[in-house]
Length: 255
Image 1 (tube, helix red, strand yellow):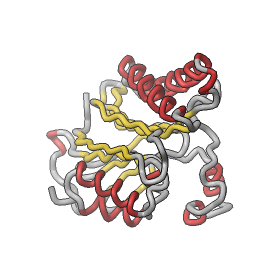
Image 2 (cartoon, helix red, strand yellow):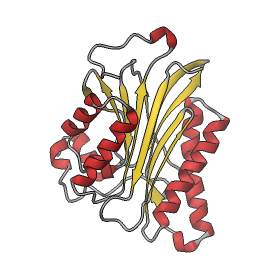
Image 3 (cartoon, one colour):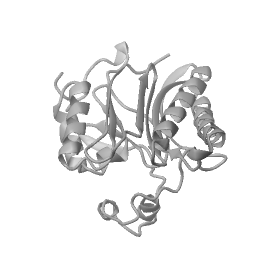
Image 4 (cartoon, one colour):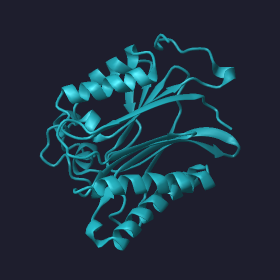
């Protein structure tokens, strides 16, 4: 089914400031997910884990684009139901960003979904492009042209989300279809990574560090060196192509 061969590596780290790690990651088969929980007092940790586990189970039953979107809905309902069962967890929620190989019309495709401000990036020919869309106050301001991407990094409302799993009865994720080539890299990460690193630093590591496990470890370590003010989670996916597409792209990293 898979059009792509993917070599993944992921790291989650508590960072330097937070007392617990409320992020959660999954790299399982054809599904790669980062969730960043919120709610404090360990509730965010529960929300992110519940969401990812529900997403994984639902996607396993229907590995199409529509099945992935429905799996996000199932994850949203699972977080809400857990909060209803345990009133002390009321108000907990989580972001989610996922990349999946889906089987649409018997052809493998790479699909991105996200809710909140965890992100997915594509590195192609040394250029970094964001594939996800921030559901946040500053994200809306950037899209409207009111502020720039650079201004968003220090905006006082940069941590305010407009959508997250577990908060609303129904949720509509952002959906994008990616078209990577052999030699490209995909990065899935929580805001604890990209809030600490400049795009140029991310590009430099993704371009120069050959193995995905080494690249993701370098990214997380540098984010901690820059402050580590939040939990830090990242997955690096190397796109190696199908056997018929094994010719490396120009500008790809040494292996």
